[in-house]
Image (cartoon, rainbow, N blue to C red; front, side, top):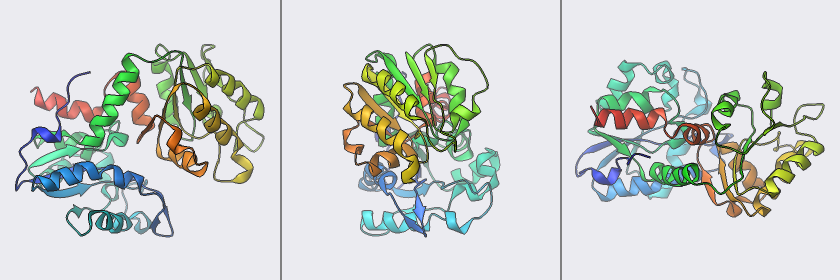
Length: 324
């Protein structure tokens, strides 16, 4: 893995820093339900403030699809941030995805945002597999580096990628079908790939035997007990487990069994355990198991793409510009 530039490499006194964070937090009735992603950004924010930098934070929340959706405003996040920082010491811009140019990676938006600062820091690992203006566009116009949380993610995942304890078991769940695109790329590295959640309904091809696809219950909201037991057998013999995406609609008592039993089997195994993605983290929290995981990655899709390729578009945008 190439050495990545750190926020600590820059002279920041009296400079304005654009900090891309991942504040895609769960909301309920306009309130933040889980503030862990906000807390993860504090190490970089506090470092910037100690260096006497002015901080403008860029983030997104949910999928408003280029329209202003008041329910997806970052205002509730701003309230939590002010509490954690004990006063309004930073400026948080409104949800980037309210602007259709963000997800289209339009140069005009990247230039507009870049004009607000002197430096750009990417501390949003979880969305760095996206070709969005705030991830790959801004580094074309500003000196750029990575935040402390981002660098920690890369450090942990690089070690696992290069020298994992085998067998390596990858568990894919949830509803985002872009995870299935990772299966082919992970085949040569992983010893087992277990597929659950909504994904079994979306599989359209035949995989080698090391890929095991769960059977779903009739209503499609959980995997069957037979599949749970088959997965648990493989988990028990694993040296490394990487899990992203619940096995079903774990928020409902009647369809939590698959996710709960899988989580329990993972924490009881002797393997090195990495869990990625917001929904999977929320499931662990519900079952009071989050403390028993070796590393909690902020991103599911980004984590798998990095393990498969050793890089991400958000990494390339900064490293390529530095090598120009």
